[in-house]
Image (cartoon, rainbow, N blue to C red; front, side, top):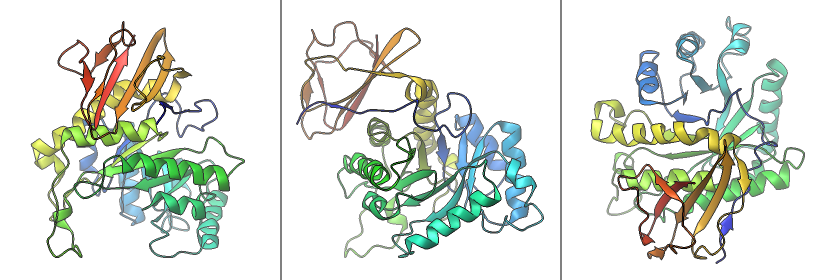
Length: 338
């Protein structure tokens, strides 16, 4: 396996709002009061399943005050009393549909919905989520943004997150050639599978650890995702993540890291990674503001050595110890600067 340098196409990819914000969002917000919690934790956007125009208007008003962006269904807003003002809501994107491949939605129906929303509000973006990246080879020509939700803990290889993002991007390239920088957003796990029905005789589950969430997040970004969502804000019994501090802290820590790294991912110039890195590693390198940044991801099931000469001068970020280790453990991430 050769070192993977992922191309990030910063100038070609349309940004969804001005500035250097990497979308860092929480799924499943239902009340305006919850937005204060998100803001304090460092998030800059959210998704809601609520569709009542009155509630969406209230969410939009509060989001505007807090400088948050939102993703919401347009269906009941179009033609409502909020039809006109909704065109000025702080939208990250209008959320067209949830997993069309699962519901076997004909492509033309999704394209028709996309056209309808664009004709209604051409200045706002559209997006939809797929439950499997392979579906992008059917639906990848629709909407302005593609999303993939993939929740592997504990039953799948964590590295499969990166595979899903890669499939999404390839599907978009094949079916939407006129938009080579089409953004892709990753929807990552913030729940325990034990909360949901399963076909297995013995249910499996477990809430993701910080190390697992961090690995999935940076792997998605390394594979070209330009937005990160975490699913979801409340568990199936209605208890918000924020009421479980040991879980909420995981995502608050990630929001803080991504708030710092966002300008690098969104505005940094792609450069070559250091020559001589172990071929088992995936590497993504950037330059911004006179500094160089390096994202290293070890998706292997074994430790990978870091050559001291190759890594000379690089300093780790977000680590308790500033020195470089001799190797990267399995399923680990290192963010470095120089």
